[in-house]
Image: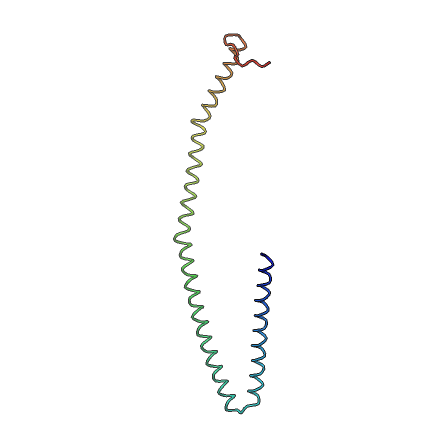
Length: 138
């Protein structure tokens, strides 16, 4: 399975390399042909490339504007939605800590203390002989 993926990746890389080489060869051939042609044709090609570069600059500017708007929206999201959620979560964690501390102090600790006293009293009565140990170890 992996060898098929590797061979397909190699094929794709070879195809991309061939396409890049053909584009480079075409550009070199175009430059050579333009250098041998007349000034009028060269100026027309130059004008076409200037128009293409202007359109490309326009597209890059529009992309930058979209990027700035997206960054502003992200900043707004972080300030107005994420911060309140984080502060609410922090408050909830503090409440849970307080509740667990209260339960530990007021319920669990007394129950453990009473259980320890009862176990100690039972053992004392077993030692004295008032209670017989049903589970004698042999």
